[in-house]
Amino acid sequence: MTLLALLFALALERIVLPSPKWQFTTYVESLFAALRKNSTTQSWFDAPLGIVAIAAIPALIVWLLLEVVEGALFGLLSLAVTVLVITVAMGCLQARKAYKQFLRAARREDEQACYMVAKELGALSEQTAVATGGDKQTPLPNDVELAAELLDDDEQLEQSQQTAHTDLEQGVGQTLAWVNYRYYIAVMIWLVIFGPVGVAFYATLRTLADKETMAAKEPQQDIDTDALQVDADGEVSGLEQQLDELSEQPQLAVASELLRWFDFIPVRLASLGLTLVGNFGKAMPVWLEHIVNTQESPKAHLVRVSLAAEEIAEPDNPTCVVSVGKFVEIAKRNVLLVLSVVAILTLYGSVS
Image (cartoon, rainbow, N blue to C red):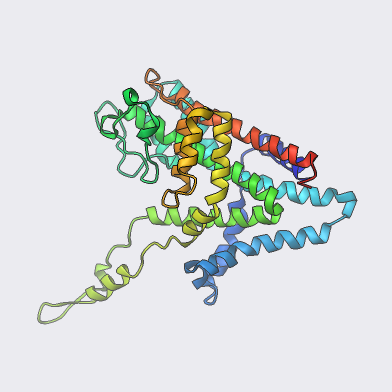
């Protein structure tokens, strides 16, 4: 049933109209709001065990629902619930819209629009300047390394020598490869190992991590000058208290750190697939070298192997359509490989 559910979910995710109704985030936002309003559960968002408990709530709901419908209509209701959970977990409305907008802007050679879409997608850092004819460089996201050792000696490209086009290509392509992993490959792996309950758990944890990332990008709260008071001696009162409150409000990344470890093995399985569907001789040594590297983020690991598995550089492509497309193509081939593995495991009875 796992393979059948996957096929139905992938087909449904492609044919349904992009809508917030098909986003897992839509269904857990109310849960997060209710937990934050409660004084007892509000602290859960700041502790690893609390984050796990929050992620376990949707998983428990899915488990109970599957228990209720088990065996009904010859198992069709269980299949329908599983397909629905997979579909909403795979839904990534923002990335799909941004990718289509990027392609349209690139094909009409609208460079400024490409940079705007890339920034909306989160592919460029906040210091990125919109290149409209200037020579400013576009730094890559901090958690992505260029992995210059993957290139031959005569092909090495220093970070300081990259053009804005190269950075745009790298940023967008790498972000799309990472989105493909988080919303497709990871969901498929969790489904095979833990079933739809595991998919709900992972999707909730992923949503919490995304919300932390968005909160970290929000500007810090300014000092409330109206609350300050000046006494007769000219001393300002209330300023020290506000400074203390601001210093006590760091952006905790508990869910992001947990997800980093939950992604440790799945992302290496996904990168192993990239070596099989890409340049095996070049990518496999890189995969083996960094397989136990705990300091490297999952995104950096996936991108490193992607760069080795596929020839990405396309210097004669000013709008980066071909280069970005290569990232997407190898990611799609990886999805087909995972489907093939699930089919083989199903034939051998290893997966129900």
